[in-house]
Image (cartoon, rainbow, N blue to C red):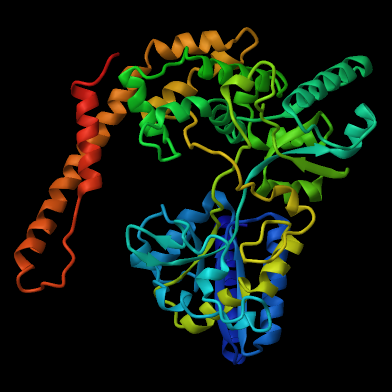
Length: 516
């Protein structure tokens, strides 16, 4: 054969042409309206749930066909951007508010979300505006894009991390299946797992962790361990302290990494690392899940979006529980904390946006209405085992273990990220001093104290500069508003006070108010 490469290329080209012609022929002979939906959640249960919802929707609406396109998350963004730019994107696109060009590619849906969802007839949500049927009122950043002051996305679920455990293995080790309820019970269980592994010569650790999963617990462990410190720093009595505000307080000298509350949190993090997979800072998510499925770990740190896949993969029964943070009665850490601990306000995600170029806006919105109706949301949680986002819909029995705890105390600051990229990389780059074989809270604290202030000033300096530039841009708008006010007396004057106050605060700390 003289030109094998050319023959293969020609065959591939002809096959592609054939597929295109076949699809075109199918579209021409089918008189149904076709809408396409793309998303990147490749967990089998999620795809199954969406397919089942599509089948039910097509049963109710035989004149519409819905095509489901599942794309791996590793290539989804470049794929969907290419489709959007080329004008070939699906009618409904899973998208995230921080991704670019939302107003260019998608339609606002403000008019639709204030109308009732017709698929909720005969339910307690009949007549309720669509946005109010979502558990967060569609106030999440994917639904309501604040920078644009418009509604764009419809969200269908929410997520939190949990410790997933092997019920069968727990029974073999302890004789029961109930997870620990307190921090001391958790520590005792980890000790029993280690003893069991030694007695039976097993490669077994209490907790499978990875570089991808440890942040789920690191921030909350530190945040809950230091909430009495956060209460002291909340001098404005807002019941909230952000990491950026904590950074300013650090530069003022109000706290540091030798403060008793911080050291208590760091010791808890050290104990978390001691019961985790050795070397977890270098291991990826799949390695940790493989250890868990192969019974090399009793528990695993798992976000709820991974748990449904584990349920399919694991050859044993699963349970899940929230990490038992130390409470006020803990003999070592109780003096520095106050509970109960909230996981914050529910914010839903997995948002679908309506393509600006769609020829079938009505049908696309109609499918989203069914997807988020009581019936559609119930189907979603029962099949996917993810959280529902529709008011009044109960999660499946498995998903109920991942229900977000909203009651309790949460101040917001974790003291482990602070002002921005420089501080974040600096702190994370020294975690090995906390979690290596010879690491300690004191070693981490000393290393951080030696160089953190410089990184905070760098981050905050960039924020101050960006704030000044934003003020300059707002000046033109404010001047135009002032000049037009006599002609348009009903116009509400614009104000840049919050931005201006933040800039002045940063300038004061960076120029005069630092004690470090």
